[in-house]
Image (tube, rainbow, N blue to C red; front, top):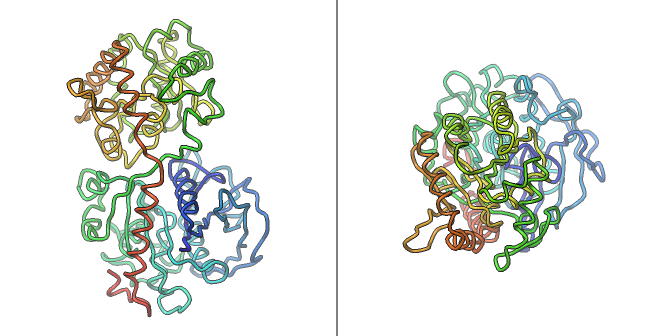
Amino acid sequence: MKILFVASEGLPYSKTGGLADVVEALPKALSEMGHDVAVFLPRYRGNKITSQIISSLTIPLGDTLRFPALAEGAPVAGVRYYFLDDPEYFDRDALYGTKYGDYGDNAERFAEFSRAAIEFTKRVWLPDVLHCHDWQSALVPVLLRTQYANDPNVRSIPVVFTIHNVVYQGLFPSTVMRRIGLPDQLFTIDGLEFFGGMNYLKGGIEFADYLTTVSRRYAKEIQTPEYGANLDGVIRNRADRLVGILNGADYSIWSPEADTVIAQNYSIHNLEGKKACKKNLLETAGLPAENMDRPLIGIVSRFVDQKGFDLIARVANDLMKENLAIVALGSGQPEYEGFFRALAESFRAKAAVKIGYDDLLAHKIIAGADMLLIPSRYEPCGLTQLYGLRYGTVPVVRATGGLDDTVQYYDPKTGHGTGFKFDEYEGRALLQCVRGALKAYKDPKIWRTIQANGMAKDFSWKASAAAYVTLYEAAKRSRIPQGISTSNRR
């Protein structure tokens, strides 16, 4: 099967979050299964290309025309990479905005990207199925089922659309409709209209053939007012086409046996190397060696509201009274960056933080910490806990979304379980959960059991990729051969 991924970021070329990891790992897993897979991305600053395929592509954008190029990059692990090359729109310091906010022309940038993706399928690489990701590519199914509905080249291509995080929707004023060349007929309650403005993500949900999100629990959560970010009703209307498929971990990169950047490799059968990794992490973080005898909690995350750091802030003083140490890595909202800086300043012998993204340090934390703390308010899937399980670094999480799907609470009566989790979004619930993990850590036999339970779990992409193939086949069957009108797109 020929499968084209359309996404705004993807490793090894670009990344701001977990979307990029998925857009790297899932195509690779599909390629290993024998499928012909390509990825279509914007060409951001620093992305190297091997050739320019089309030097000038005409893209209508409202009352204007743009003339970007289409380019090809070097294949990686059997996956082809192609780019929309428009330096005015994408050769910038960051992908989506600055510390002051989103770029003011994001609506136009990703409208051009979506149109270019369809033109790419017509002119360069016609797939059997399109797999689009998040709001930045959500106009692809909208355009296919409206302005391209009578185009015999592309009208029958099925679209699978993945919601990685429903909170990020691509919200713009209604005036954007004309600026990007969409007709007024689409500005309706069954189209892109959303509380008087327009919503790119809503369009993807309404017009795609099948919808996925990145864990089973999150697929249920986003159909509720609490987690649906005002799109729960729209999603419930399409629940018969919504599937939760858990993200996987790329064990060729994230595995203590094969990791090339940690201090010493180790495995489920011999954990001695983990002690060397902990020693190295403490040295790297500038924490004294006395912390070798304390449970070391690692945090690798974006520092944003979603991730539950307000809970840590509420109980920080009580938390730091415990016999533990903390190493945190991340960046995001100034208040949380400031909180972690203050924590490290107040508890210099027990806490360290690095603000920013550092892949090398992320590997060292995953390998060297004893526990990973992930107290998210909501978590569509989460990859950090999957990495932690593989490395014998026990997750301490809130029971939401993919965290709940992947972490099994340790039961001392049966010896089953892979971590610790709490339900109520309260600081005291977090503190009690951490204390439960600290108690278990005091018994080496119990702790070794929990580590082994987690390391034995298989969250590789193999099963998830197979589930996606099944969905692609269903999407192909759902397409009416001669095309489909907007009135009966469901």
